[in-house]
Amino acid sequence: MNRPPWAPEGVDMRHASPARMYDALLGGSHNFEIDRKAAEMGKKLVPDLPRLALSNRAFLRRAVRYLADQGIRQFLDIGSGIPTAGNVHEVAQAIDPDIRVLYVDIDPVAVAHSAIILRGNANAAALEADLRRPSELLAEVGATGLIDFTRPVGLLLVAVLHLLSDADSPAERVAELRAELAAGSHVAISHLSSASRPEDAARLGANAANVSRVGIHFRDRRGITAMFEGWDLVEPGVVELPLWRPESERDRHEQPGRSLGLAGVGRKS
Image 1 (cartoon, helix red, strand yellow):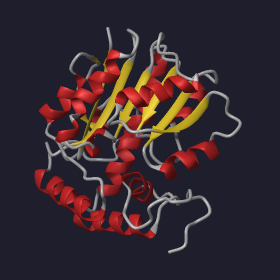
Image 2 (cartoon, rainbow, N blue to C red):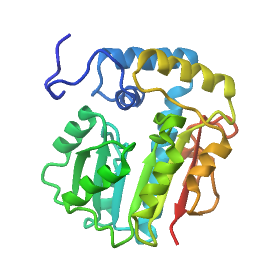
Image 3 (cartoon, rainbow, N blue to C red):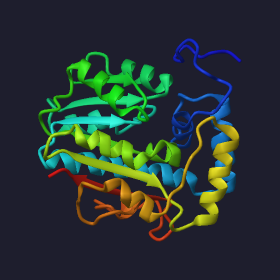
């Protein structure tokens, strides 16, 4: 298997990566054959899976605009994935070019490609780190000098917490991050959910376990809402992806009542 020129040396091309599978579902080009096969298998199991990916990206863009409207001028995007159209820095810096954005991901392909896209952008950077070790991650974030933890931060945890198992204690990881953020900071979370379609969720979870070293963990509404403990939930609370403050019909990629994802935004008092 030949390594494409955009892939870092030593990257694992034998196992599918959630970030690259997501890129494949969105029609991106920074994925390997194993990722495309995994994405195709997922689509066979649940044909509307690409609409879920589009719905999640639409939520991300709406959340970034909302946080920028609340005065947030620095964003920490953990689990940022492969850059695609409508990235956080593009959306945020269209509002204010001085907004700072730091992308963090565990996938070296995602980080390498982000770094290429961000060349020449003094207010954005990419970092490889692991959400399962928040103290180390925050230390590396602080070392970049891009994020000032004495001021409010827009923490983005979009489509990443479902990659953590229950043993990884995702709600506790969110709490550890919250503890280090200034009052006025916000968090935006989206998470795959079994609430509306438990059978489809089970099929997709089993497929991910078969093709990737990283499992995907669909959680119910209670489990996802628990991740906002300590945050003041913004209206309309934890809802299906297309129902979080849609701006137009173009945001309704999924039929309400059938979304495989839940999302919400919280504020630290």
